[in-house]
Length: 120
Length: 243
Image 1 (cartoon, rainbow over the protein chains, first blue to last red):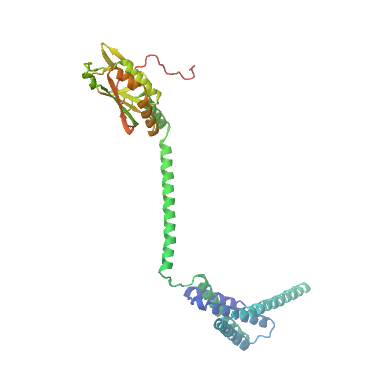
Image 2 (tube, rainbow over the protein chains, first blue to last red):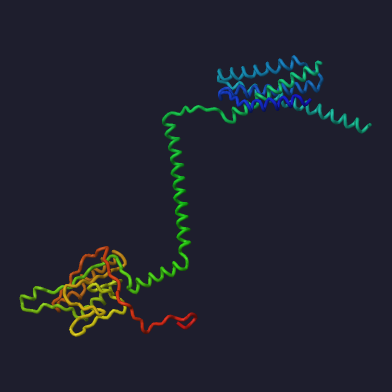
């Protein structure tokens, strides 16, 4: 369970060390991509906890979501409509839902283990 | 097997996310910005910098002034105060040369009298001089000298064997100069105007003398009193004594 966190930290350190900066005009896309990635990540965690985790869905969802979000933002920029807000909204809502589900699952797990401990 | 693979992909994606976050963070934090300002924007920037510079200079000057003020305060110890007082007293007693605005009165004989056979007066009677001094003092002359002799509080003007003497200095020939120094230019003007209309001129004329009163000038030098001031009847007040 801790491996993904190590990966996250390694990624952050790598990113900070390489000092890569993207042009300002593209930072919007990256931010939306980050949001999409977060959404996928928490979705994956939730699926993992609910035992319906599918690797193919997870990986494809990750890339597809990122590309979709970025292209939405791109389209929005060219249409003059802030379409990336739609992506922000959708991903934000899903992020909250996923985290809420994860919290509940963890709570249930915790309480069942506590009960088990009391029984034994 | 499947679980392990899942974990690996999870880790990979987490790494990618971490990388993305870091890049985004850096981009937002310090964007690489090219300098695309045109000349007017540059001028504005220069102006702000200049303002800053002038502010800093003002601050520097203020601080330096403060420093100088502290320095002078430090110097103004008790000793300095005593010295200042001494100087002040010296100038009041007439022991210092004084410069300031004032007038010069020249006393000269009336040469027209020769024609009608009158003798040329070569002496100024002490009474006349005293009257002149009184008048000058009345009109707020601060420092007075007659023929280069400083007039102080103890100055005596008297006739000794037909010679008019000021503190022992004999007035032997005319014309002679009387210098009067006042506090400021305005008072010099007033003094000049009053002397112009005073009776002193007439009184001198009776004795075949004429007063020439110069226009007030700003830098008249009155010499110091050269002889020692004899103080016979003055004693310093004893500490705590009855004054």
